[in-house]
Length: 392
Image (cartoon, rainbow, N blue to C red; front, side, top):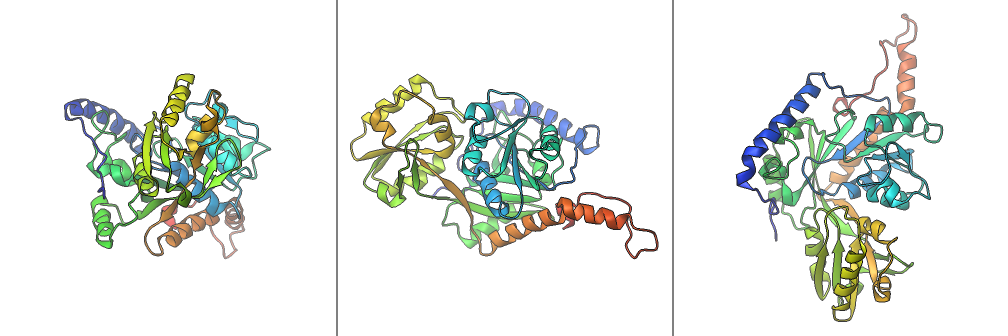
């Protein structure tokens, strides 16, 4: 079994450059802390998820977890940057939006949750203002900010920091020597810290060791999640395939994500053999790549199939030039997260739901009415405001 932090590689010779980078990031954070650079609050529940490292920490499945948690009782909006999209400014997704218009992760979420609002804008303050004021979306109840932990121009009500178990920030270094995008003290802004992609067989003692090693403040909550997988779904048809059915197959694992190694480890025991073919995160596939995939699949012995991620499927489904046997045998593997410790998921859910309810527009309006009652009323107050998570 791999251990925590085992994917970290530090280029020691680049550490002097990391000092310079760290100075610039610390200066920026200090300007926000003293108020020269402004963080804006909103009178609507805003939940931010993100990390402080380069590379994936499992943001999308955690955003999807929050969508599933809230969607039945709240009108949910997801606001993302829309990384590598071909459009500019604010874009609200609809049923006809393409991956190139809104980005692969927002496209994936809109396809899976068609009833929620999905918008993209590199300027998150403008995106929130549009979502809450535009006629088409002004009934939104809660906004989830995807990959916004370092976007400090917005002050969220709950700030969730995701930390990859295999790339623990406590062992890493700043860019370019390591993969940290800001100093370790940046974790202090988090209300919740989730250690993601944990091995499923972590022992109670390991949880306690990680809890101590993260060295969080009393106001911060620590959670642990692992990845679970659903039935495979064909990219080009309505076919599905259970994970049990891949046992005799030789698998070509096709990924264009930041960190595919956990998938490789999880799938290896489930199939006869696994052959990874990897591209960079958010990779835009070319005809040369399609030829490479066709040739790699043709060289595998039968029985065989291709497994890819949902995010990669969003970029593959519109491509041409696939061999017929690839089209018939390529499947996306849906991922969802699961909290690991007893009662951990319930505690997380309660914190989120409590924050959203206390900070809903209806609650704020009710408070404003109470605050504006005559002085002889038994209610007192001097104005409206958003209740922060740390007040709960």
